[in-house]
Each structure stands twice: as C-alpha cells, then as structure tokens.
Length: 223
Length: 223
Image 1 (cartoon, chains in turn brown, cyan):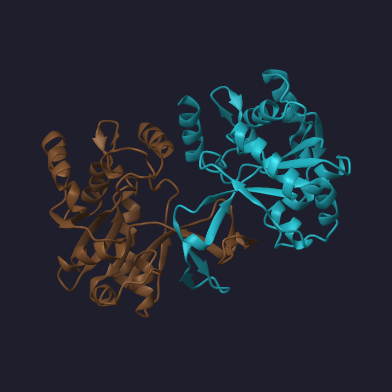
Image 2 (spheres, helix red, strand yellow):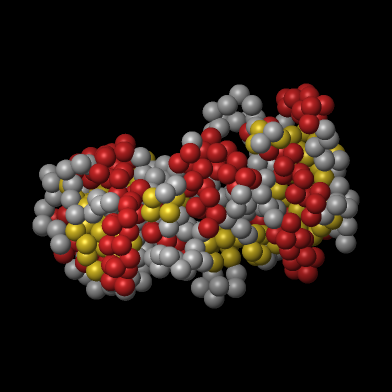
C-alpha cells in the first residue's frame, strides 16, 4: 500500500514563551521542523509529506527554506482552528487508499524503527498508536476542578505520534462533526467504531513544548 | 511545626540497565542521591533527612560517602518490599507531630521554591502534592490488557514528589494493611479518608529512570 505522511504544525509558541512558532525554533543550527521531516524522509523515502501549517506562518516557512534548504515537505496545506481541522485539511489532499502517518511537527526524535513499525502495524491491523508506560503517578480531577482522586497508573498508557492509519478507514472517520473529545487522531478513528492497535513508543520521542525541552533536545542530539 | 524529610531510594537499577543502583549513578561528578539531598538541605536546612535504602546497598552508600563526603542524610533506615513499606519504615523513625516531605531519591531537580511551597501548603491544608498537566494524550487499558480506550487528557494530572503531609494524619494512615492500590503516598493518605491538596509541580522535577534520562539530567545541570 502507498504510504503518506502528514506533519501537523499547529502551535504558535505560547508555551515556549517565544515569538517564533515552536516548530521553527533552532536546535543545533536547524529548525525543529526540518529535523522532524528528515526522520520521515529517512524512514519512508517514498512517502510524500504533507505539511499542515497556520497560513500566517507560510512566509516565515519559505524564508527558512531559503536559508536552510528544502524542508522535505512535498505539499503545504493551510491549518484549521483545532488539530482535528488541520488533520482533516491534510487528509483531503490525499488519495482515498493507502496508509498515513500523522505526526506532531515538534516531535523531532521518532526513531526510524518506530516509524516503520507503526506503518507495518497499521498495514496489518488498520491502525497503530505508539505508546509508552506512564512515568509519574496520575490523579483524575473532578468535573468542578476542585478535587482529585488517585487512579492506578498501570491502567493507563501515554500515547505518542506518528499515529498510523488505513486511509480508507480514517477519511470517513474524519467526516464526523468536530467534538472536543477528539484529543488525538486515535480518538477520531475510535469514535467511528474502529478498534485501536498499539505499537511500541519510545521515551526519547518527546514533544518539545517548554524552554527546558529545547535544552533536553540539544543534549539528546549531542549524544 | 517541625519539618522532616524522608528520601525513598528503593530502586536497584533494572530500568537503567546498569549494575549500579540508579540513585548512585553519577551526574557531573556527584551521585544523583547527593544532588537530591542538597536541594533539601538548601530549601529546609533545619529539617532532619531520613534516607530509606535497601540494606544490600548500605556498604556501597558508606563507600560513596567516603569518596564524595557526607550525603546530607541524618538517619539511615532499612527499606522494605514495596514503597509503602519503605515509607512506613522512614515514618517510624519520626516523632508523631510535624510536617514530612516524602521524596524520590532519583528526582534530583525539585526547585527550592517547590519544596518550600509544598511544606507551606501542607502546614495549612494537611497535605500538598505537586502536580503538572499531562504532556501526552493517554489511553486507559482494559482489565484484560488487550484493548484500550481514549480518555480526556485534561481530566488528569501527573503527580510528583516531594509529597508533604501533616505527620499526625499520615502516621495513622500508614497503619493500614498494604494494598497494591497504594501507588504513591497520597493514595495512602486518601484511603484514610483525608482530602488531598495540590500544589504546583515543575516539568524539570523529573524522575530519572532510563539511560536517556541521565543524558537529559546532565544537560539540565549544564544550563
């Protein structure tokens, strides 16, 4: 089956406390987004890569391409209000069959093996969601937000991206109206009645969201 | 109220894939445990520090003290089978009144402010559990382990240590028989009918459990 990649770059840098959108921040001389895209080019060289980006960042993106060379994205698509709408915009640009990996722009360290395993798992089972055990204990907050209760950490897993899907199943799932319960792409797929298959994630495959994460990212690159 | 600290060093290094217990691994010339203890010495210089350690590691601990100087621990106590038993052993060495902060040995970066705020919150409310938002989406695993379902990440928080308590409430709570549902000290306190008060955690206050975490810890120290 043909393989496709959608990279979702929704952020505008609020949590990073910077003026630059976080996917454009530099680690060791290259924007984070460029590093993310290189992993996919290496893992699945045949797969076209659709980059979904807020329209206000198109100029900055092109400017960065003139400085750092092509990012590796083969298609550039306008993002929407929520992640759901951005992924939908990316999906609309794809054919109706094949496999798609949907990945966060600010997660630059998925291993080649992780990406390939996710595609292989989705080819067999229809979906593949990389997951890892939780490291910290967690508590559930009451609906009022004023109270919390202990839950068993081993009953939960943390999920990462790339989340891979059979496009012929995912596209109809994304025809549903938007719901705030759609916290990731797996939850949209699941709401359409499909079951989710897990595959191994990796603690290093982290999402960079705070200034400390950039320090950590540089250290991981240097190793 | 008098303040006390219990440092729990239960680990034997399995996840670190090393022969050295993880609390004894070095970052920038000093064992992790030494770095953890220094934070508490700085934040609450008046507080005695009880170190709970597996008995098989006592010799190695004393050997490290002869190389790196005193760790800062004022009392050394034998650990038990589970974290619950180790904390209980530490609590038994304390008086029946005051405030106690219970902290993971392999979490060397609690800020001075975080430690003091936790003590102050517990002085007013009886408990203080540092918490931060979840970074990744999470899924709940079915009891069989073969299936999982999406849950709303914003309904949950990740909890850290130091978890601080009023000793006059915590000691009776630890008189309960051990239950596997006791995933942290807050869950023991809660099972005794007390309510939990949250206070601000910090993403940098991470637990070091994998080899990559050591690389990250060195980078955070260098910043």
